[in-house]
Image (cartoon, rainbow, N blue to C red):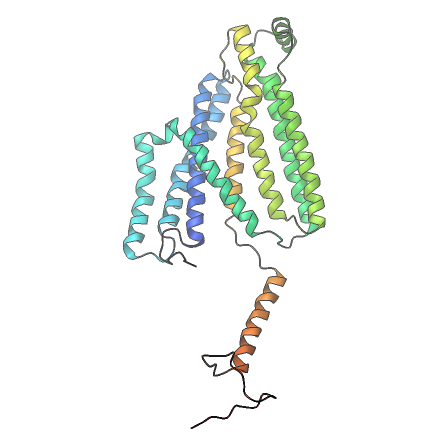
Length: 338
């Protein structure tokens, strides 16, 4: 089997770490761009300031932290020669400066590029989970992880529902009460769009089902704490990502009925988007930890070593034809004709 050269760019765990940090950089930078596009439409100046500051922090971490670190790790993967080490340092220093001063970090094109980065991140996560299959883990720790992440997911669902059905309509039409807003929407469209309810119900059912599967799987020894934390972070990311779909139709109805803007007027959706991107980044980087060695793997490796040693002792001077007939009927050496 052909192996990757030890000095290759994509050799070893360092290359995977570099790819992971680059995926994180793109996802977080793109989320910052999408949030920055929504900030001017917020009705509250306080919300604009808070969300704008959080978006700036995310952008700085992505451009000045994850991007240069990813390039440095990726270019120096394997056993690099001196010129590649210097190239890695130059790239790590120059890349964030170029992104900052060319405006690439604020380009909406990053939103499209983030889809490819997210796919790559999910591939890294799948690889990390497959490598850790069957790792030993205590059931009580799995239960704690399920409880914490389940509560976090339910909090995201509650905040998203409030954003879609309460905060955003009231911010879009502040001169009317919530009952009056929905009264006009029902009178005009006949029914309130069910997107928010479908989103909330689907996310809740996924949370409950995932919690049950995790607890039962941990009792059978097939689900670990690492699995629970990774999948829990991904579930939070998916829930926040599909929030735009849940509020799309009701946002259009508000804009049409009250001549308001079609985007979010409340900051809840943008805050959850930042949280979701951070969860995806954490899930990707969580796969960079070394998988613990299982006892049966150690024993198997030891048996293989002992088997090799016993073979060496049994045949200290192997011949070219080890399968030749030893000679006599009872294994005596065959006569040699001079």
